[in-house]
Amino acid sequence: MRIASLVPSATEMLFALGLGESVVGVTHECDWPPVAAELPHLTATVLPAELSAGEIDAAVKEVVSEGRALYSLDEERLAELAPDLIVTQAVCEVCAVSYNDVVAVAARLPSRPRVLEQDPSSLGEVLEDVTRLGKAVGIEGRAGEARSELERRLDAVHGAVENADRPRILALEWLDPPFLGGHWIPEMIEIAGGVDVAGRAGEKSPQVGWDDLRDLAPEVIVAMPCGWYLDDSRAQTLAHWKRLESLGAQRIYAVDAASTFSRPGPRLVDGVELLAHLFHPDLADPPGEIGFAEVTAGLRADP
Image (cartoon, rainbow, N blue to C red; front, side, top):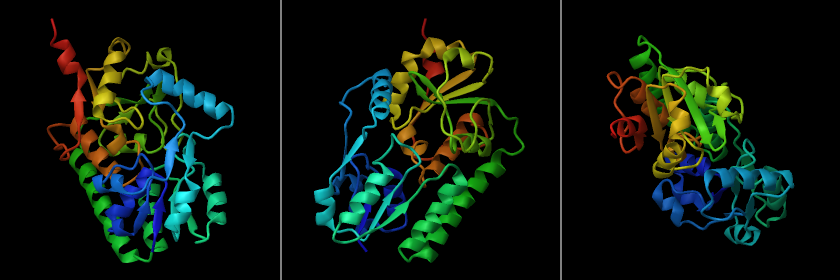
């Protein structure tokens, strides 16, 4: 089977299921595992490079308000690759090529590929996508084993922290302007032994004002700007340090959001394990090779 993946989380899931050799094309953002980045790129963004966080937000809102697409799809190259299956999503209009555009393009391709849509809003739905993807490509047994292992790891985290005191957590998926953690983020926080003071599980990440955050009294703030890796996440956190500090949290962390929080794939479980370590470092070890930075420690040590 020849598979085109039009969303990074699906690419990660395909490789995790041992289907990497079947993947013939990916998005320009697919970079995990590293070999995926070497495959033909089928998409491009219309946004200019090197925009600041605030400029990205403004540009996205302008493009969406005008009814234009944020991503382009290379139909000619897709046709050349002749996929049997295209995996895409419709849960986020700013994260991937439009689902309707993908369906329209697929109908014109000589290979007449099936389009599989993944639109999870919770960890449970992410796990169900593992099952659905396995069924779509005829590897139900392998997908079942992979799902069971992810569930086992989540259960291990829950068991390690279930009797601990739960700190109050504020998760921010963007800082300029601030967006609360939505979709699966509140659930991740709960499993990891925290109490989300603002986010609502299963709902889209809402934009809020800084004044809306003043009375939440978080003990821990986790900055996870959507799609950004640790260095940029830390830079955005530092840029808004005074506002974050004014919320009264004892600890403020910047995390590698692109790898473990933004993409609804297997590495969300790494994100849960990381959160458990941040909330309860004496009870949970950090997952290997997952970046994070305690911003408070460095700044408060400065004279």
